[in-house]
Length: 432
Image 1 (cartoon, rainbow, N blue to C red):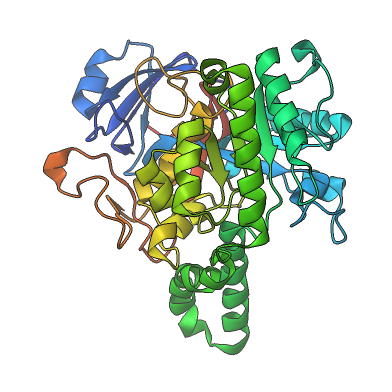
Image 2: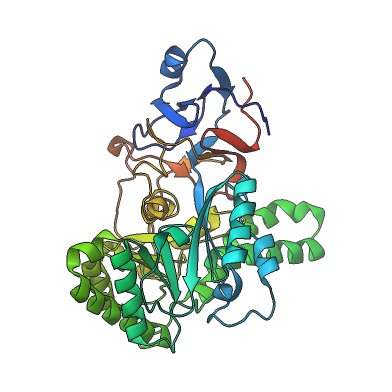
């Protein structure tokens, strides 16, 4: 990593994912801000004489991903005390900037350990988005100045009274805070399962195959996750414990909205984290409540949530965040799928929009936005639509839909460099 950060950079000869110009091949970064995106020739003409020129060599530049990481008992499937891990282990597994993350939303019940995780995230050069999660509902007023962020979580378990959820939502709304209701996670992270499956498949193949089979192993490493994760990702049946718990949460939210008023309730942007299977009626209730849903790829009906108009963010802390995009694209059931672009936005721009007080341009590469981005080595780029979900975006080049790395190639994209607010925190500057 080059620690000497120039004031102005011009990177050309790449593929820049930007809503400002879907065919952009270059970008101009001025200090901490994206100043311009467009064509190579125009970039060279706009740049000042002191700008540092870098050749991307066909690399793909995208907004950096936003990771989501749970500490302590929140990381256990049903909120139980961890048997196999510890808070120290959770901290050691924090997502890294070198993997293409520019920010980490970290949730924890222990203020001290949450603060330590924030320190480590920032030391790695990333933005930290902490959320303190209470195990018990608020019983009185809360001082927002005492919190590390304008959000306050509540761990909602199967034995949590519905009225406790209502009280938490009401107290947060009155205090001007975003309530983050954290449900127990019934299934492993599809993206992590995919990576583990790929690693296991590669290790097994290496032990039994000759060196000439190495090329085939590389293909298996990408092909296995979609099918192997399918079993782990299968949504729980209707009427399951998770579905009944969500019904109680939605009833509590509706009661809180009636108590505080619809406008103040909607203005806080309350969130529900850890949603898995849900039916059409629950999707409609979420839409009316204007609550944002945060879920793992392959576990919630992304197609149905999108049709209902529910804001969705995807959560992952996988070593390669593209595994989460692929898990959403290749989920085992049509209702669990979404396009690669929708999944990517739910891990970048959508994740920032879900944050209380987030900057409106965060999570995208457009003039005036913060220059928090990742550079990827990808074999090809394209517009990928999930099968059976209907076309959300046209794949015709004339539609000017920005392209992303293809997830059907022999390997997933690899992160070459990460920049946060104009500072290169991982990797090297593109060479001239």
